[in-house]
Length: 434
Image (cartoon, rainbow, N blue to C red; front, side, top):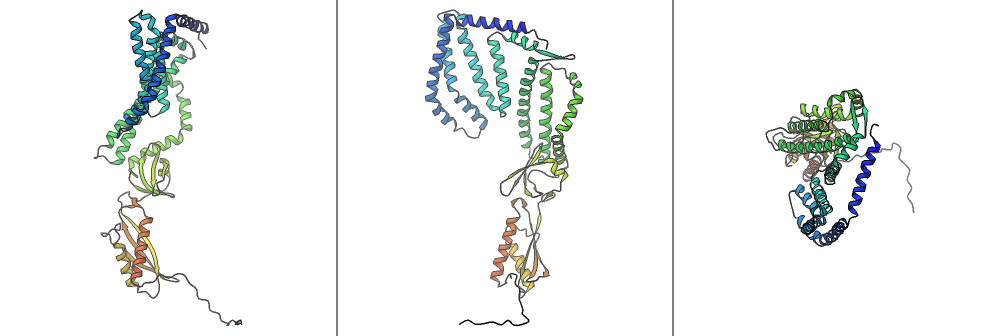
């Protein structure tokens, strides 16, 4: 460590005694009393008005971002009333004394306004961690400026440092990195989402190209944001070459799966093997693709479950895409009828029954073939085509089976159940009871 701790401590003591001397003066006590009274009145006003205003604000429809800001503003009505009352009190005091005797009121007004503005504006940031970092960092910067101690504190934090060769790692530098990185990453995410929505609104582009373009834009903006944040914090990017080897090895092992899934996602988008809206089957999962993300694919099944499947699985495992080249899917339904039925008539009835269902395609007509003389029945296989596999496969098979049942009942065709005949070569002796 290289900082001069005595200098830092002495600076802190000087500020402490100056603040103590000022706050013990009569005018400072008056201002603190005024601030306390303003806060009490503001709390009472907000307690009565806030529920009414908030209930009306919830009538805002179709704009959740605006609703979040309005609700955040309404839930801080006591601060609004407090700032209004402090401003009025400050103006009254200024009419009767010197401006220097309103320092506490001015500081409370500025800091309260800053905190209210930050609390409301950061509601548009969905990541709460980034929102807190930006709010706390901005408020601390403003507060130090109002108290006129920004430069001494910055110097003290900059002195608290360790030297890594020609590079000076200080507390001030770390705080700058955290604040600026959070700020620029949020801006990158905000602009990335905006451009992604604009790209998705272009109807002439394919779904895969939309997702790929959105990923490229977001990743590019994040990289630019990191570079700008590090540069703005005062970091010479050439110094990163010292750590590049170790960082590269660490990323290679620690982020192996993350990078693999990201690259797999890019490959999927480039070769267009799957796209949003496709009906796919991977292992025991059958459903339609809702969204392609950087790390995973969102698949929704017929029972409403949403599976987040890593992109790598779509590269390394066998995937059945029911709608890759087209959405036409052929399904088979097997059934059997009794031996006393006419197989030609059974074939005709089965085809007609399948044709009557709305999901069965007529331009690719159903066919029915007799496949075997079974142990208990004549076995048939009915084949038909559908054009909407995303609507489900089990349900259409069930509809076809019900249609066959109804048609066979109308035409007197029986569906046998397995049975066995037992023949005794030696008659059994039976006795009849009394």
